[in-house]
Amino acid sequence: MFIRRIFAGVTQTNLENMTDPVENHFRSIVEQAPMALGLLRGRDMIIETCNSTLLSIWNKNNTIIGLPLVEALPEIREQDSVGWLQKVFDTGEIYVGNSYLARSTQKVRTDELYLDFTYSPLRDDNNLITGVLIVAYDVTEKFRAQQKLKETESSLREALELAELATWSIDPSTNTVWYSDRMKRWTGSPQEECGLNDGLDPVPEPDRERVRKGLERALQPGSDGLYDLEHIIKNVVTGRERIIHAQARVFFDNDNKPFKMIGTAQDVTSQRNLQLALEMQVQQRTEELDASNEELQATNEELQVINEELAGLNNDLLQSNELLQQFAHVASHDLKEPLRKIKTFLGRIEADNKTVISAESRNFMKRVYNAADRMFAMISGVLTYSTINASEEKIQFVNMQDTIHQIELDLEILIAQKKATLKYGRLPVLEGASVLLYQLFYNLVINALKFAREDELPVISFESSEINQQATRFAIIKVSDNGIGFDPVQNERIFTTFTRLNSKDKYEGTGLGLSLCKKIVLRHGGTITATGTCGKGAEFTVMLPFKQIPGII
Image (cartoon, rainbow, N blue to C red; front, side, top):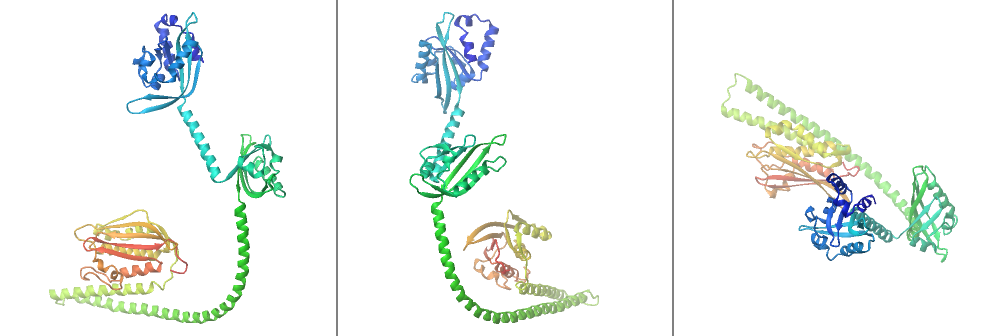
């Protein structure tokens, strides 16, 4: 090596005769060398020179310069390196060590270093050995990489063994086939390597030609390099046949020429025999089903007659429902009109300058106004409640996060008046009727705003999760608030039509909002429950399926 030759030409005499600039330059070379360098003088191995790399390996500083090696590094007294150094000094033979594990003891930790090193003798002008040159390379990362590679190869071998896979490869340049031990056992081949033609001997006709063509196609320049074929192989010694699933990949060089084909093979004989047995069973069951179908055909003819009768009854029921819907619409319209007139004439009486109304009468008129408003809202609610099952809604994917955001925008003024906060993160996307799902959560938000506490700003939170029940995936959305709440004994009654848990004078409403919510949820094949605590708020848990059954909504 170049550095070692430099040291070999530096004798004790000429080192002492060096001028300062030359010596400084020499020491600079040593210090800047990429490897660890050190110079030991005399039989006592006095440390004369060493660069920072060697000091780092020893975990020492330059205060050890001028000390005997075993005094500077007492931990090496019991190590073989002392004997090797003495042998180099005594015999003049160069000693080379590979991947030696060095430990540098510290108070806080112990480092492990793997080194490649050389101990070389240094001679004076009379060819007498005056010292030893240490040249060392830190190969820790290389050593660990090799260890990691060995571990990976071991894991791969274990994985192949566990999966009961055989491996094989082809060298296209020599048409040489290599078999793993398992592949040799399957084929009965005593050799690990053989020619391509010999490698195809265990493949009986007509599979042999299919295999040959498959290999040629994969090895063809410009192909995808993939080989995937299922075929029979026959043990040339025992004659046992098995079905294997062989897969391989071809590797091409920069000139698009194949240089390696590596593959695996799996014994699928049992699976194919099972498949054949299942096919025979399917054929037998099919014949039995054909006989059953003939019997069912006669039964179906009878059912067809019954279905025709049911269709007639269903048509009558639809006509009846349509008449009821028309009646509900007309009744709703006819009831709303008198209410409008009551409010109109009350307004005219109140606006007439000739009318003398006492304070008590004005209070009565205000109550009449409020009663008329409640009656109007109740009529609209009854109409909505009665028609929700009659209307056909389009099923589509509904992003509930977008739905809540739209409700927040639509109720922007009311939310601002109440100084309320809506908290929601990522909510699910599920199938349903967009209009009805909007109405469902709109009612829940309105309910939370309506029953907010006067001494605390409203906070309405949305949380989502999912659950599987009876092979159906459900989304669970919890809507909670910090409002006035309700008595837990009312958990079920709260969804009953026209139910009011609070004074109608203090909290306006029709008592239809939550019953409408329940009706929408049931129509989507879900459930809704409520839990409340007086003075601490309420929580509504809505469970809806991610996917709707056609014809339910």
